[in-house]
Each structure stands twice: as structure tokens, then as C-alpha cells.
Figure (cartoon, rainbow, N blue to C red):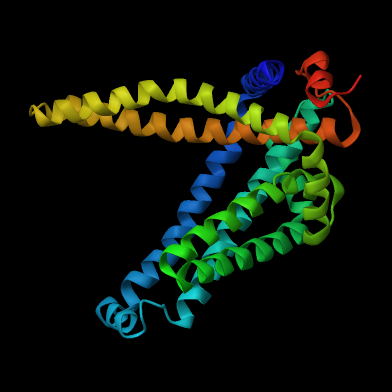
Length: 285
């Protein structure tokens, strides 16, 4: 157990070194976040201006809090657009990570070209993910408390089953059903390392998040004391640091995912990772 934990932190450290070597890879999560914001605005603005929310609330009360069909249609569209932009950018990042692991110097254009070459697979996966997301919402709304528990359990199971789907889409260029099956097969080899590796990354990111919290708290205290300019300045800095923290965390987890995939798939040790740690983690000689 202690060896697995040690391997997990070693994997996290290797992932961090890869990102510090190719700092431009953080652009993929930033682009993903920007596109996600555009998706949110493209749905929120029409809903805020075109829907009579007083009438909508009355309909909910009259229908035992069950939303009308058009809500699920809008939710499906939102989920599809969201999954599409996130998976597209993650595919681009995984492509660049795999290039680095094999001794090449990745460029942002390399990642986006690979993602564009996988548009049919990304499109199909976004459709499947959006469908699953809506079905989970239907289950959740069917019964308030029981539905929430069941939807949460099913959502967790789906997240686990699809852990390796993005690198599978990038490398193996298969459809959604085959990608889920392949993800499960790879997960059986590396579930422990995926767990402890992500735990190691989460611990590192938690430590890095402490200064952000402190800046935010100090900024609030300054505002309370009437020191508006320094308080606002600190909050702005804290906000920027929060966004960078989120982007860094996303990039690190995606790079670790690519490393675990490569080694589980064909036993090749990614460049920047220790061969002893990888072979020990996966039980290979």
C-alpha cells in the first residue's frame, strides 16, 4: 500500500515536470475554459431574454416540479456543446503529451491538428455523453432524494468507465462503444495508479491553492475595513491565480492520463517518467 502511494506521488511529480518543460500545454485548458464560457453565454442569454420565468415556475409547481420537454432538449444541446469543446481540447492536449513522451517537441498546432483529425469520434462521443447526462437528469428528477442518490451513483460509475476514453479516441480512432470497452480494459490494469496518481496531484494542487485562498480572504478583509483599492486589487489577483490554478490542474490530470494510457497500452515508459516507478506501479518486470 505504501509503495503504491509512493508511486502515486512519483507519478504526480513526473507529470509536473512534463508541464514545466512544456509550459505552453497549459493553453489547451485555457482555450477550453474560454470556449466553455462562450457556450454558457450562448445558452444563458437567450434563456434569460426569451423565457417567461414566472410562467415557467408556475408550470413547474403545477407539474410536481417536473420540467417541460423543451428543458431537456435545451439541456441536451448545452451538454453536447460543452462536452464537444472540452473533449476537443483534451484530445489536443493528450496528443501533445504523447508526442513529448516519445521524444518529440510538441507544438500547439500539432495538438489542434490531431484533434481536428478526430472530429467524427469527438462528435460521436459528445452525443453519447450528452445523452447520458440528460438521462441522469431524468433519473434525478424522477424522485427527489432517491433519484439524486441513484443519479450520483450512476454518474460516478460512468466517469470511472470512461476514464481512458479521450486517449483511446486520439490513438485508436474508434467509436464510442468500442472506446468505453477499451477504457474499461485499460482501467483494470491501472485503476490503482490512476487513483493514487490523481490523489498525489490533488494534494499538490491543494497546497498551491492555499495562497489563492489567503489572498482572497485578505482582499475581503481589506474591503470590509474600507480599503477599497488594495482590496479589489487583491481580489483581482486572486481571481487570476484561481483561473491559472484551474488550468494547471486540468493540464496535469490530462498529462497523467496520457502517461497512464501509454504505459498500460503497450508498456512504453513515457519520457520524463521513471521506468522503475512505472513498472513497479503496474506490476511489470
